[in-house]
Image (cartoon, rainbow, N blue to C red; front, side, top):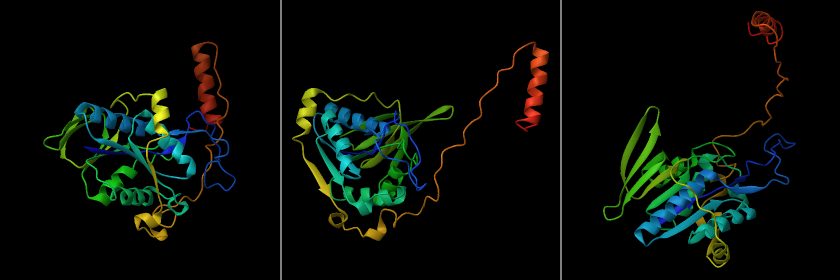
Amino acid sequence: MNIVVSVKQVPSTESKISVAPDGLDIDRTSLSYVVNPYDEFGLEEALRIKERIGSGTVTVLTVGPEKAQDALRSCLAVGADKAIHVKDPLAQGGDAHATARVLAAALKTIPFDILFFGKQAIDDDSGAVGIHVAEFLGVPHVAVVNKLEIDVPTKRAVAYRQIEGALEVVETPLPALFTCQKGLNEPRYPSLPGIMKAKQKPLTVLTLADLGLKPQEVGKSGSTLHLREMKPPPVRSEGKILTGEAATAVEQLVRLLHDEAKVI
């Protein structure tokens, strides 16, 4: 059973985010980065499947700059067997469609039975990359999965999705792609032996030329969506606390809503 987990290195949720001077990106100066939390659910599920069946290979895949290798090494320390890093400046900065094209091209170079993606990345929140990859590869996909059952002999999977007021159950043949939601599992932490072993595990670096992709197909050139402007939300005015008798407070509230907030 060959399982591939797509991961993305994203700014830590503890980082203070501000808009870059050009207004087209966040200011990435001095930011700390982590593996996208939803991708960690995919990695944990891949490791559990491998442990349950007693065989198989777990590969982690990413597209990004040099520092993205830190995310891959972190995944190798947790238990992944090998990593693939698509590192090419022309492949970066694209939308979900362009990024998915790169990932799909990389996946075509290796065998796979199961593909795991996070349901979304916490930096851009597009929630579309995994679905685009499935379309590029022509494999079935089930999004936002919080429980998964794999039958190895029949090469079929049963995925469970929480929908409004109900639980949806989807059966699909393998190979297939699944995007992972919170509740699927509880990701493990890397151990000290795992961290030491990660240094010896294979990490393959690929470029666009290795994947047979043209620069105009990927990155900003291959994007179908283009960011025009990024700006922080407007500063919220300080709140007011009304005190006194209920009748007086209500009178004050109505006046403030009419005269200051201008909503009535």
